[in-house]
Length: 627
Image (cartoon, rainbow, N blue to C red; front, top):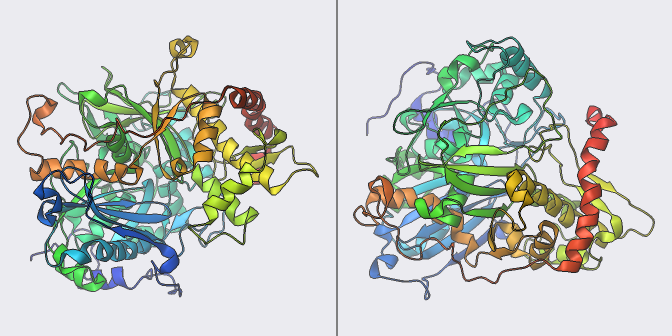
């Protein structure tokens, strides 16, 4: 099959024929290969294979040729689910990464990196897990989702260096330089006092990371043929053999990066990269930005190349299968949790994984623009809640969200530090952590925890914020500290919920989200943590009973639509879309709602009044200057 082997910036010393070898070798060009245990060994695998006896609605549910392999490239693991058009999961596998996140070679405070080759390896293992029982039958497509707001430098199907993750906030100096250049100087063709970058969130913004690379790793940056902004974007590009046509970005991911410029058009919101603003900084070449894929069900970006399949040992039934770029994890989770179309408008949910958020779907405003910073003050007022308005895969909708950088990641850290003997036992450690936390009373007897281990973006933006225990004493036990971690994350969710409410909703006796609110992610698997969140936020939560496939269904929805596997367009659906099968989206669930306990909520109210003042107090004391 013909493949693009030339083009601007293609070096003869990196021929396309070496693409798959570069992917498979698990070593970056500029760093010495490091030995590591095989990905997905016994401790790194969680898999099930089944033909559902409860949701098989038709023969097509068991026909692999009408199924989509839905893949979520997470922060700690990759999950793959083989879905039938009605949402039945025929098989699934979860493969943890061998090394996961690291601080990289720089050792800088706020640095957070990950090796993209681990995503590829995990995919190869998970695909074999799921597809092996089905012989040579080919799935209809591969749909991808994953972490957003990353910076991956890529060439010829391989990453050139470790990825700078969404949680990487090392670029504090670059953020200030960009803010001053574009805001105070009125540069890039905009008036002084207005800011051309939508959802620009300081050091976490991708332009800041990009400029940091231009200043500190210019040699590698100069070799890149494309810059990819999501983990799923890189996986799509690699699976298609490094075809430049497979380098792309979905609208939700793009709107998290701080690289987008938004404006209205007559028919739908237009999205475009802010190339003029980005190009004002030496070493930042806007030509590296990938094309935007707009619409709910765009065509595939390519197909799994035979060369890549052979090099990675992928199942033969994946060769030449269409690859759908899909959407970022927040979008796939949103679609999976509350559905698509008009029925999803106004719906909210809470997600608690390594990171976390509360999100609401709403109609695009008449202005059609995402929020930008509009103040001449170089310092953001961090006493005010920070929210995000993100593009929805459906151009008629938007996602209004408040997110925290580290949610469940706080528990992963606490398990490692407070219960070191249990860490690494994936099946037992969370249960033991909950048992330790349960040994302490509600409110942890005044012990408080700030969950900002990697900086924060909501309810305030502060790249130098860090975690903190308050009110430790000789009487403090491991149980107090474990429970304080769970409660500290819950208090931040309360702040997120407050940030999303309008003044009228805050004055109302009922909350803005209705009750119960769907709750999903790894945190929803813990009955203790779910109850703490309900108590601390005073919101009734409804853990989704099939939460493990929620994001997978949201990820695969666009592929099913594009492939015509949901049947013809329905007059009931806007935009000429097909109507999803009944029960595909589990919004109306069937899980037991968890209501707040009045006495526990009162205790948390008292703690929260102190907790919410701690960040400002520490920032005012100069704590951030020490990191």
